[in-house]
Image (cartoon, rainbow, N blue to C red; front, side, top):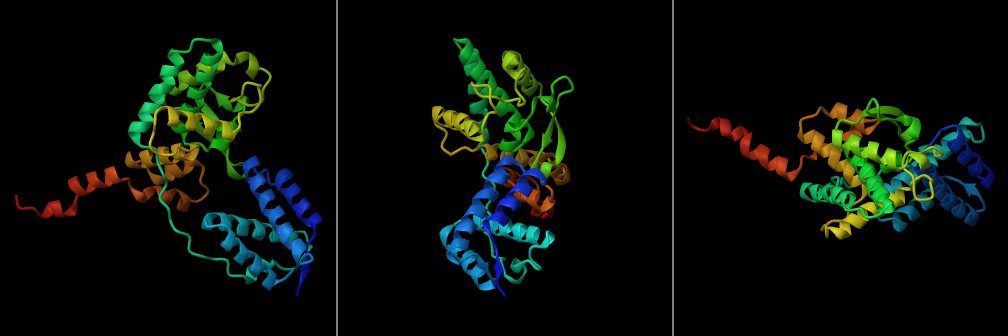
Length: 309
């Protein structure tokens, strides 16, 4: 049995995601892209959907996108959309329920920043701060230092960093209030004095601009700093220091989590700090780094207990 899906249904669904579900801008953008892509497909089949047409669409996604994670997200968007239609009595059943959408996704280990490169990067941040010759250079260096210090020392997502509001930064008590995926709130302590100092310096230098801003990290126009701007800051240091790996903001999060695990921090605490709704997501960090693995297998190998005294 075929069901009719219109552009109005998709528009209403995206509106609900924006207003009622309180999804962040990044997720909303992804949903919008996914639904617009689905709408283009609907136009080719006269907006009539059945099991066969959905299977054809999903097959096309697999052909177009080499990354299983991308296909998985687009399928999840469709499932959520049809659930919305069922909930609002627009259709009786979710047609995706009758389609086998499960497929093996290769488990890729998180890419982390080499510790030596990380030390070089942070050292350069403070060199730039010390060697600033103009007020503009000083402010840019202070902002870059503060945002990268906070990004790494808390393991927050780049979207959470950029969406951080002034009233959610308490430098007196030393914590930030984060609203993550699904508008879930968590409070993270700033547990390092150098990080605190960098944030206080940034706030002092940008005091005038921050008086009229909702967001803590801003660009030269006084607007919210974009995720792309953070990527550009990181890439600039990557090239300046000739780091032999492409760095991304998310790698700072991966590195933070991996280093906590290597310090024997309970994975449940790491889950809470990262804002993961499921511990399954956090368990990807139990891959144990090669250095830690070497240390364990040399110093704590069970075979050692069988040695003759």
